Length: 99
Image 1: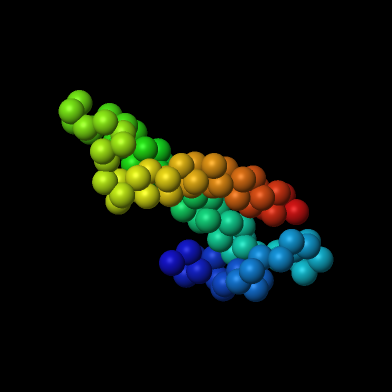
Image 2: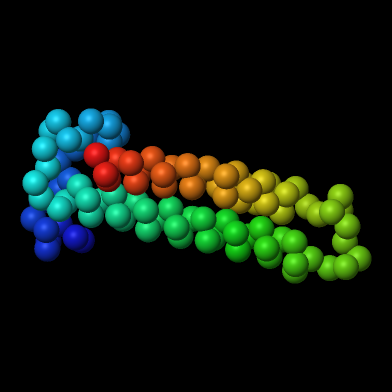
């Protein structure tokens, strides 16, 4: 909904191919979209950390790690992969914003 206040879309393709300085975007629309993607990344990272902490701390003491169901293991693995990959994507978005 930011386009109502800024006036237009980001003006780049949906793939964000890197030399954005060649195209020249004088408006704030592209910067706002990158900031929105950063916000989504922070939300995903915090949600993944929440799932990992919940899996570790909220299981019963009688249930060992090899007795946890497959759904919990896949949720934990997905969260672990998000914790590893989202900061890398955030760094690339930062470099794209500074371009």
